[in-house]
Each structure stands twice: as structure tokens, then as C-alpha cells.
Image 1 (tube, helix red, strand yellow):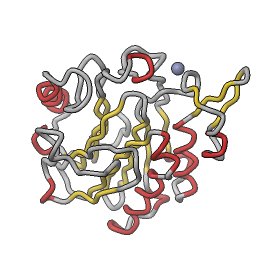
Image 2 (cartoon, rainbow, N blue to C red):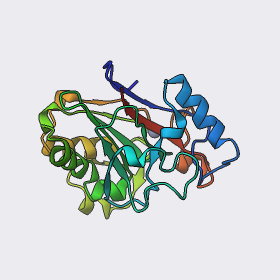
Image 3 (spheres, rainbow, N blue to C red):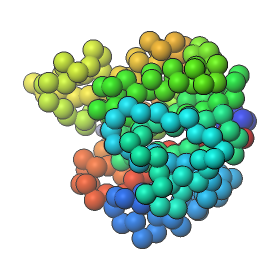
Image 4 (cartoon, helix red, strand yellow):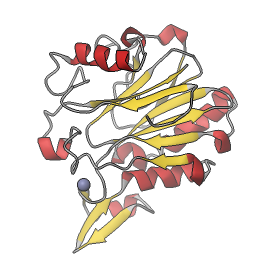
Length: 234
Ligand SMILES: [Zn+2]
């Protein structure tokens, strides 16, 4: 569990269960989603999903959007990488294999969000943008918002080009002439700049490349499955 708080479900799945309708072996994806979500007390048919294009659009999900992308990829929110809601029992999900998922929860206004934060969306500061939309839509105070990260490729393994030193003002590590990116550190920095308290940001920080419990795009190739990061207000 990402947050130990009674008002929220926030969790991520592991391999070998593929949760994607688009990537990897999708034959069992619907059954995998149903089983994983049932174990969390979440109805899989209510899931709202983004189609994830590594951009910076956030959608505010309402009752009328319940089930968008729950049964197929085509119905997911197009051109979207982050979702927020204030609706109870309306689970939001993103899917990753190395990219970072960011979970957001405001226990005061009872609002939640989830972000698909690969390097491109992180470069576009999507997590901070998602916080700002929670402030605008739900009157959240950034200082009240709790944040957590799903497993992602860590700075131990995420080698990037030298040009990344120009993309990010923190989170780049240099080792033996090579450059490595720490997506969690980048996003943590952006969340703090957006007004979150450092002590309210908890990092699971498990590396998907090192840890074979998880799918990893870099380790397994583009046809690997995807894990689900899901958040739901109770
Ligand atoms: Zn690693």
C-alpha cells in the first residue's frame, strides 16, 4: 500500500500479470485486472484510465466518466497522462513498466490523483501540474496533499544521454562518464516546488530493472507487460 490511510486505496500490481490492453500479451489482461482489483475491494468495471502519450494533460474525472478504459483501450481518455477525482469508489489507473507512477491524496478535501510520469512528462512537470489542478478543482491546499511513488527504473539503471543534464535541474547522476536519471527525485523536487511538504512525500523507490518482481521495458523490451497503479477514494 502506498498510503496507510483508511480513506484511500492506493496500490500497484506486479508481474507476471499484465494489466495493459495495448502492450505485451493482452489475452489475460481483463481477468488480471479483475483479480487484482477485487483483492483491493475495487470494482474493475468502474476503472477510469488514461491512454498515456507521454505528454502533460490532466483530466478531472467525474461520475459520468466511470469505466472509461475499463474494458478496452479505445475508451480511455485520449491524449492524457494524469487523472484526478473527488468521487468516491471511482478508481483511477495508470500503467507502467519503468516509468514512474505518482500517487496523490488530499485527506482534507478527500481528493486523489495518479500520474504517469516518464521522463517526457516529468520534463513537462506533469506531477506539479496535476497538483495545481487539484488546487483549482477541489480547493486543495498543496501542503495537505500526500504523495507516493510506484516502482520505477532507478538511478542505478536508468542511463540517459548527456542532453538530459539540460532537461532537468536535479535528479541527474554521473558515474564513470555516464549519466543516470532519478525520476523519483525529479518528481519529488517538483512536488515540493508545487507546495507539498517533504515529509508528506514517501518514496517506495524499488527499481523495476533490478527487481524482477516488476515489468521493465529496458530489461524485457517493448513487448513486456505493464503494471497497474490504482488509486480510489473510499
Ligand atoms: Zn536498478
